[in-house]
Length: 488
Image (cartoon, rainbow, N blue to C red; front, side, top):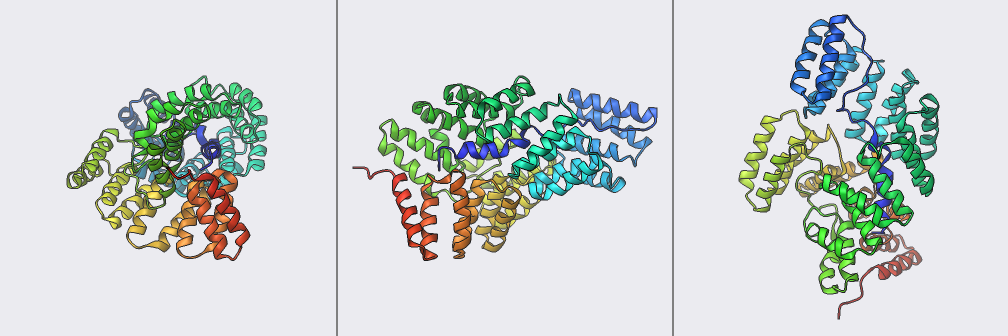
């Protein structure tokens, strides 16, 4: 893939990076009796202190006083989400909307949940409904602007951000979102100034630190960017985007030995991304290790939609996932299955627990069980890693049409996701839908996938199948430039 792929993809996803997850305590304004408000404020204090059990007890007291207050159920939903009870959090959010169909904080919470589970496009009407009811709410306007941006609607995002800045001139998110837009417009100087005004980097916000690193990369300050990204990668070792950006910063800065030292082992694992694997291969090649590089370069061109990622990248249960990872690596699937089922019994409302069950079922050649578990997990958060695993399970179960539908639906909700474009193109190629393959790959190449040998090879085949031999020749010429020379 192009050396810009990771940067382009990350910029496409940074707008919502500082948006509030459904989990954190909200600034929702509640009204009620003195006793009710005392219980709510006590619960919120416990949430801020991290004592979720005590917070739950205080919310129970508030429920005894006003059981049908929609704002209270919004708070309860956020508490449950924060405590890993995502499925029951969704039920609480639905009940809040049942009690107050036009209650803006409940609409906002549901919009956030829909964005996680169903994608950006399906969440947009929810954000619009919340904004129409409470147009002067900075939190709603910021979330709406971020969602527009991640859909690629940059002009609409700009208008919403301007409204946010006018409504709340000192709102940090307004400066952050403007910085994202400036970075996308390749204006790193302006982006840096706006990001500094947000104070997000100073406050340690991960998405803002990643944006700062990308701004530095745009300015050619690769070592500075790498220092920021290395710290982030240490803090978030399972964050694939951070790993890719760190490798890219080192690559562009000529730090090949650091790429090899940190990522060579990771690139050899089944869960490694094709981009990271390619960079490891290129780094080894540039260091003179052509024979060592070839397996990585070949693997990078072969990773496809059926690559199985064992365990998800955002785990709420690290002890369980680590143990399961080790069990799967040792091919001890019977014990792994027992552990994953026990985890589900302990955390029956956790989407992560269902994802774990799906991972073990997929590793144990039980794709139907994996599909069932992944679909439950997707009600909470339909991330791309989870979606890829769901697609892999469906293909293994012989359900190619549902797999294609899942990929297509995901891409509608996240239209700038290059991996999703490429996976859908490959699935479409299997059905000889060459026109769709051409459109998908042309879009992916325009956004940075023009150095991916597998993409170029498939694009050449699509052109040939459509009878456009000049396009096929052009794609084959580009492909020849990307492939390493034969090793002699």
